[in-house]
Length: 95
Length: 477
Image 1 (spheres, rainbow over the protein chains, first blue to last red):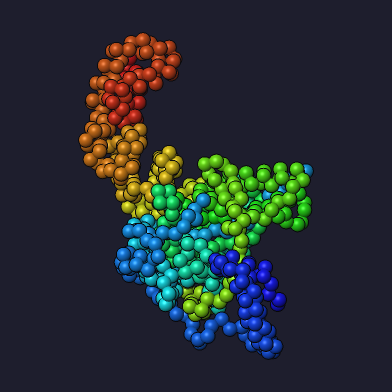
Image 2 (image 1 turned 90 degrees about the horizontal axis):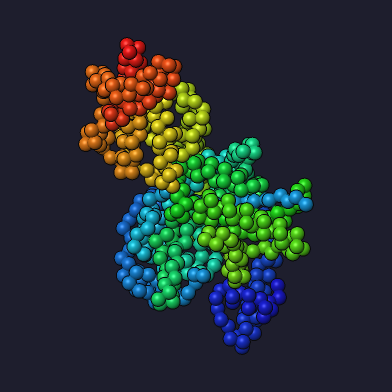
C-alpha cells in the first residue's frame, strides 16, 4: 500500500495528533517502511494456520461478580491533568 | 407513489450485575461523580481488566431466551476512538465473534403477528457521562458508568412500522426483566435504542440509504422520531434530493432530529483482537445448565395462570406483561387471596394508578400483603367495594397500613341491619313522594331512596343490606 500525505492526515485526525507540515513527509516514509515489513510477512503461506487472537495459551480467565470498595476519588483524580474536587475536566465536548 | 419504511434496531441494555464488567466497582446507578471508579475503569496505564462471569451468564441467558445460537468460542475486540467519555480511548467490545447470533422474537401488533430476527448480541462496556459546565466552559467527566456491562442487541432490518418497533421493545424489555438480566429502566439509561431507518417504494427489493437516530429516551420518543424521520426522507426523495447516510440526534423538546457534525460521524474504529482479555470457551454442559436455569417466562405464566388459577386469557396476558405485576400477583395469591380478586384489583385500580402516576410497576411501593389485606376486608364485609377503592387511593403511594387507615377514618362498613333499618325508616318519613312514585312503578325512585340511605350512613353501609332492607320495607308500605 502506498502511503500518501492524505492518509497521514486521516490517521492523524483519528489519533488526535497534530503534525507540523515538515513531519508529514517523515511520517510518509516511516509508515511506508512499516507496511513494507508487513509485505514481507505476507509472503508467508499461512493458509493452514488458524488466526491467532492471543499470544498466551490461556482461556476463561474470569472473576466472580463481587463488589469491592472503589478507589479513593482524590487519589484517582491526582492523575488527571485538570481535575476539580469531583471530576476530570476536559475541553468542551457536549453540544 | 407509496413508500415502505424499513427499520433495524440496535438496543443497548445495561446488565443487572453487582459489579462492573472488567473490575469490581459497583454498578449502582447514580452516586457522587467518580466515586464508583478505580484504576481499571478509569483506564490507568498498567491495569489489567478481568471479565465478570455474571456478564457472560446474563448474555447467554438473553441469547437463549431470544432463540439465538450461542457462540462457543468467544473473543473480545478493541474498538478505538478518542472521546473523553471513554478514558482508555478504546471500548472493549465484540466484533468478530459475538456471543449470540441468529435469534428470533415473535411480536404481535394490531396488524397481526410476525417474527423479528436478531442479527447478533455482543458484550461490551458502557462509557462515562459528560456534563458541560457553562460557568467554567469546560466539560466534567464522570466515570461512574464507565465499565458497566452492556449487551447490544442488533436486529435485522425487519420492522415496517413504529408499532412493530414498540411491540418488539416491549417484548424485549419484558423478556430481559423476567430473565433478571436487566431492570431495563429507560429513564436511568439501562435500555437505550438507536433506530436505523430507510424508505423505499412499496414492492422494491432494494434498501434505500439509511440514517441512524440516537438519543431516544422513551417509547414515545421512538414512535415520534420514526414518524418524523420517515416523513423527512420521503419528502426529500420526492423533491429529488438524495438521502445522506448520517447519524442524527433526536431532540425530544423540539420534536425533530438533527444531523450530527460530520466529525462525530467519522467512524473508523480500527478494531483488533483485545489482548487483555483471553478467549472464553463455553462448553455444552455450561449451555445446558444455563438453559435449565432460565426462569419461567411470560408465555409459560400465561398458560399456568389459566390452568392453575382459572384466570381468563386476557387477565393472564395483562398481568404477565410486566414482570413486577406478575410477581405482585403471585405473592398476593400465595397469601391466600382468591386469584381472580387479585387480578381484578391489579387490572383495575393498580394499573389505573400506575398509568395516572406515569409509573412503572417495578417502582411501585404498594406491597402484596397490603392489597391482600384490603381484599380480605372487603371479603369479610368490613369495607364495601367503593370505600375500599378510596382506601386504596389513600394508601397506594406509600404502602400505608390498611387497618390503621380504616380505623382512623371510621370506614368500617355498617352491616348492622337494625341501624340500617332505622335510617331507612327516617329516609322514608322524609320522602313520602318517592314512596308514592315507587308504588306507581317508577323504579328510579328506588335508586333515590338507596342513595339517600347511603348518604345518611356516609357511604359505609353494605349495599346489599341497604337494598334488601329498602325492598322489604317498601313492601310493607
